[in-house]
Image 1 (tube, rainbow, N blue to C red):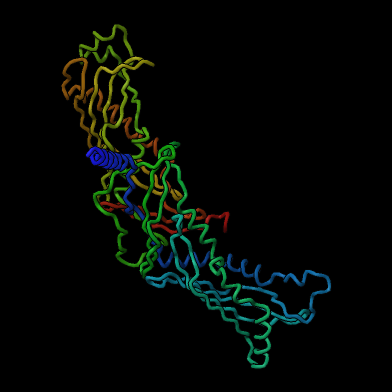
Image 2: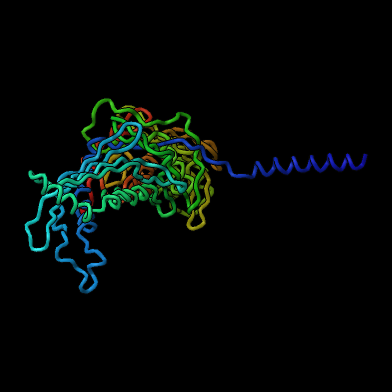
Length: 455
């Protein structure tokens, strides 16, 4: 009986410990997108265009390089044919819906014996590419099929066959197909840069993480992202969005290279993170002193026998909320403003709840979204706590509404003065940008531009 009781107690203890450990285990964040982008067929054409000179350099390096046997004295064969020039005539990319991409390259070669007139040759490469997500969370461009063909441009059949034999020796088509994606402009390096950590403020960062491999359709290449926000290097568990976000479908063919979409939850999570970091704890200057305040609130005079400047110290009492409607973005702030005097030993004698709604202006500079506050749309003050008796709402507004409405937007603008990095590839910037605000999300149609350092 005793053994049974001890066994039952041990089981109960283990169950209790398991329950406690389960509570202590960190909750895994919900994997749901809050932003994303669609690379349009026009954007894909631009990537092909800027990859053309890069492909030509890579092919020249591979096809015109002297073979190792030629580097040894006396090993060069004067009768051997050589590639004398390489020129990429065409390079294109097209979407294979629900599968990936097709890469096409047309290369003009000239091959000749030493001291002879070169013979024009056409090298054609067709490759099917797809994008996978690796175990590290990064996207990778991979080759699923490659079909190179080489043909001599000669009207005489015998001569054409002769040069075909030469081509088989000079052009290693199998080697070309081993890593055909390298003929594009560093695609995997670019894809890895998408998940870099971007600073927001000195203590806050954000990171865009793909949730899955992109979706290929006639509309373009759609990629859904989840934003991780960090404070002092630790991820912030932001509230779960009440409305699931998905990439909006384009109404018609877009004239932009890329269309970014940012959900309302993305902006709310951004402000939530900044609030957790204490970025919105602010000191508001005031022209009031204890003597002038005593004229409106008589009990202040009994607290201070000398005239001291009044200080307003504000902090968020609840998380900010961003609201997106058609053509309009607004930010609602829930502040507690402590009013007091004394420096450096600040002592509060009055606390006011301030609910402020301000418009937001959104724009894009380079690859950053600039967020600035517009005019105050609504502000309400109410008494929260007082050591100087009951203060009427009208008196609170007369004394403190103006400094709150003037200084809070300025403080918010200063916090985000550097802007917020948008999802982007490291060597590109955005041009011809427009920002379109819809209900629950923001669209950013833009064009891609390779930075001049890589041109």
